[in-house]
Image 1 (cartoon, rainbow, N blue to C red):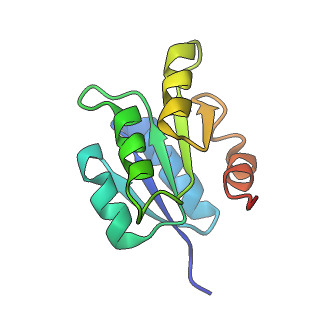
Image 2: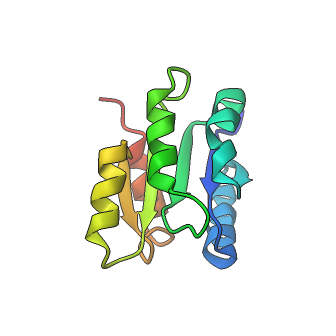
Image 3: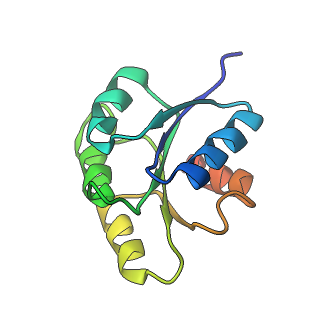
Length: 124
């Protein structure tokens, strides 16, 4: 069986690489995306099972990138788990408005990754 692909968008090295390693431990193929402006094109080409995106970025508006994923017919079905810093409800609301499937707290994502994945990948 082929390993499912997860795209992980991050700028901060430590939490990003921890997330990549944890996904690999869960038997995912992982492609790190450090330039969020390329995410939609990569998602179109690679056809991932899901996207995990750290909302904290110094370069780009990640919520805008999530919205672009949702507006593209080839990528609109891909579940997106957005990762928000605790204590920033405006960022959570922005991610939800952009179309994130689920918004997880930065501190909780690694410890509860399996549950977040199960919830985001539920077929309704």
